[in-house]
Image (cartoon, rainbow, N blue to C red):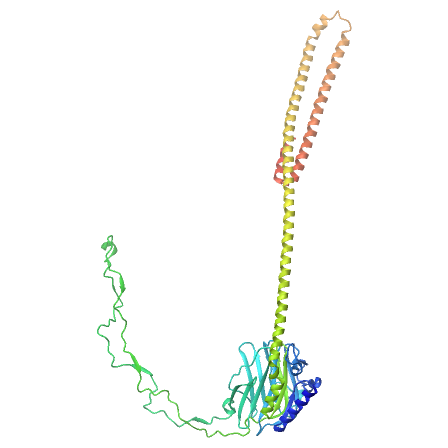
Length: 536
């Protein structure tokens, strides 16, 4: 470990001998986070921490400043070791970014700020000299910002450079040279290069159209194509008519001219028709193209030695992100591109393959965990389905038992109802018999009464015949008593029979009502009650 630190220090010394390092931060020191001072311009400033992330190739070289809070603005600024005025020097800003959260919308760029900045007042309106880095929001709004300030006006590069949006660490480099040319690199590969004034429209054009020039009178700027005047229509060209009568058509046999009018054959397409003839088109021999005024030197153009000259004292974060997790690391501001390349290889490039393998292992573990969760969920769903099916089967069995019981009860009720109907019929027969008996008793009583009356009529004769018989009055009294007794017995028997029949009918009616109630057939119950009451 000591050897590696010594080598790094020696390398840094060698690099600084060729150029100067104005800011360098790998965040390997736990106290390095304190160099980034939070802005007090907002109350909802997101929190930051030091972290290598969930996967990395080398933990020490992967530690960076990580955004902690979702849906927040972040305003932080760190002071350079010394102010950096880039006039006559190479200017290099380089850093790494890892969108660990699988970015959907969020910036990851740096702002390079003047030495006069007050970090406590730093916000989106603060003046800056350079803004550089990736910015992603959705699938279409993606670009690498490369904004420079010229004469207090911020100007974006006239080119859309696509950022890297995966979850690995990527290195971004912006190099402006003393000759006013530039390079923008991602992962050590040049994405764009050229003259600053050609990509940032901050200076007047070197040449402009001659405002005094006029288009010549004989200038032909159209049309490009004209008809061939020497072309002639072929003699066999048929340009009409498009349709002709069908020569093969015949008038229907049932056609009545008086009723249907004059018959005409149907029209068909003319097989020889070729359409309207037009001469062929040829290039206009006099066409010279669209006229433009010739270019002349712009009298207002003047080279500016201060173009792309920056005066930097702070590096800052002024960004918004929806999902937290972005990690910034290996921030370097120098005037030596060779040292920047060596620094980038040491802190990032040498660990790319290891990070890819680490990310692959994490992905496989997460995929395995997800598959296990899916399998567990599927097993749980299957178990729940089996439980639900078993419960339904039990409910069906209970329902079948209930249905069987109900069927038995319905059968018993039907039997009770039939039995009650038989009892009612039997009672009806008993009532009829009782009525017959009653009629017989009444007939007997009538016969007895008639006999008594006949006896009374014959009494004088008998008395006359029985004059010789002794104790005649006693015999008459005994006969009257016997007749009265017989009449009383018949009356009692008739009353007892009626009472017994009424009780029997009442019991039959109650039994029938109970049977009807068990069967829950209200309409039949009402009918049976009516029948019973009618019988009563």
